[in-house]
Image (cartoon, rainbow, N blue to C red; front, side):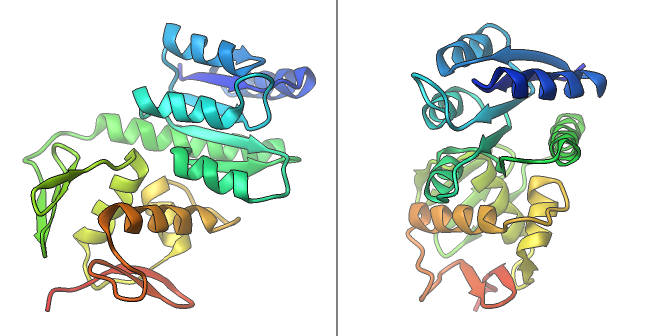
Length: 231
């Protein structure tokens, strides 16, 4: 039974969402603030965290940052803010996605189901020989989930690594944002594509890549992204 940590200071919303998650067969642990959420995650690691951005005391962004320092647990942020700056910051800190309030329960349950399905498929995958890739000083070791540039290791968040490895496996092929969300995030996403853009921008920064003169990740305007072919 998947364990979901639900963090929201709105009691009615927390209970409504918790009730519906339990009806879907999930085990739900509820927390009303950031400190309680961090304590719950440390006591019993969850399979998924549904995390409100606006929390008293330790806010959702800080909770996200601390969780990501010690775990690759999927994080779905909930936010009521109209300003997208905080959403982008949350994604940069390591959240897998966000859902803006008010949201439909059907959409939230669909997101949860898809994220947990992706986690289960990842766990069930039979390990094979390490898959390695190297181009122009960039080396990707999929078996060890390690990326280096000219021998220097680059620290990537789990979703950043997955995105880079996916693109690098198919150089020259253009992927739309929707395709990347489906293949890398694990669901058919019909909403805001900013999630992909934020992760690509973060990847470029960490790799020392430039959008105007890309060594590895190219933007295909009006379409999406691709990994440059050799030559």
